[in-house]
Length: 403
Image (cartoon, rainbow, N blue to C red; front, side, top):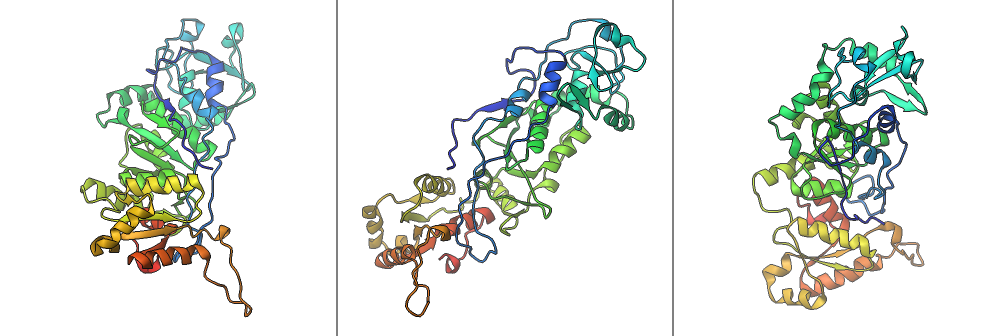
């Protein structure tokens, strides 16, 4: 079942009141990569002119330990020690500040302390520089990819990493007001998203909320994203829905990058340009998608699933009729009746199809019940996937394809 529990945000930056932590153990916590899967709730439903079932997923509400660790990024000034005589292999600075954190020392992938930090083969690196470097992580007590990333960093301009936090703090592009929400992201993509937020001072929410500004969606090799509940709500609210590549581009440039080239344009059921259409609809202050439509839900929906569909309809500006008494009142107004749709569950996995003696499939009981009721009030029956298709495309679909 998909249930969005009470929102719980992960704050980026250093002003969230988290007690200071310093040293290698903190760096290890936030660099150790976790393998965790999003539990996605799939409902198989009938396809309307699509080759795949029309579904939307809901990601697991379990709190990511990885995200929690990122919420603890420390802004405390590290104590002075012999480390301030060492030069960081990345930013080429020996200074210790709130931005850099303490200096850590490694030999053969292991941290060393005391007299060992003066050996000729030791590698010195600020904790914050480790956090900033994409491919470095900890495997137990060992730091991985340190030398590889040093070679990559050598191609960058000196001081680039040490100056990045000051740039984001001085940015005039409103990054402090950004609220990110991931959609069907892998463990590595979640890691990158929360890391980016911690650097630029944005917020990451595990759940959809109206103040979300950017939904970062996982995409396949064709650039198509999964149709999740977060995605549909973002379309209806006109929010940016972007590929993870936008996060990578911002981190590489160290300043905000224009979102439009990274906007998702395709979902995994073939709907095109829904995110852009939804965003432009919102910018133009156009009427909401289902403005003027009335919906009556009939049949054996799973209760929590129906609740989510009702929420989507309301966000889209539609009106939900809660009982038959209200529905039959529409029958006295021809104009209202034509704008009233009877919604039934056309999930094929739950259909009970019966064959007659000649092997022909009889119309499912759900559809017949919905059509009988719609005919009684002079309206039309639609499968619930018509709602999902319309929202995903940000365009009211043809009613001829609604059943």
